[in-house]
Length: 233
Image (spheres, rainbow, N blue to C red):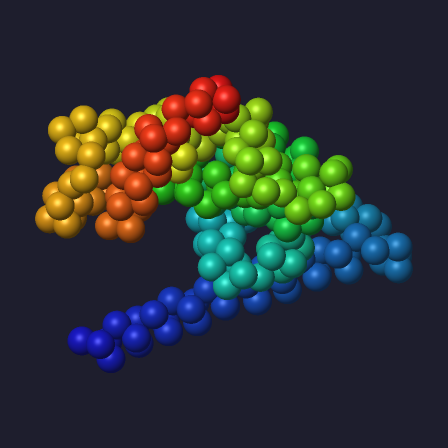
């Protein structure tokens, strides 16, 4: 079974590579036909004809290049597409455009893409990471120094995630609101939960045992220092 699985994976990679090679060949031919050295009238007309790919073809190439980390090749592929394809709104294509914009440091375009398309929830973690990393990078360049944890927290508050890449549930200190509520409920009952209670809470909330333990430790410390908590509000 393992051999069959690896063979299937190799077959998929080979098929994707064939698609990429075919695409790049078409792009090179199209570029050659549209170059000034083409002297015939037919070449003049062909230079006005954009490359046409099916939506499935576009999605296949975008996913293959993204998974392989070939962002420069991905950028060249997007460049070869006609404007009508770029505006079609294919999920894989829009994600590819966002990755390329981030890779090239064109953050205004990245934000525009992320805000204009309702992405599937399976793509939210990656796109949220791009959104925040771009904001951090812009701030670091403007300030001329690395950001600290407080700086990043303030930026996240200033530039909240658009609903197009967010499920709408508030995240507090990197925990979902429902997870934080579960932690608070147990804290009301027992400020020093047993290891078994912590493990059970970790299972319920989807957090790690370390995250649960640290939350209780930090919460107890805040309650021992109420003046410090008030000063941060």
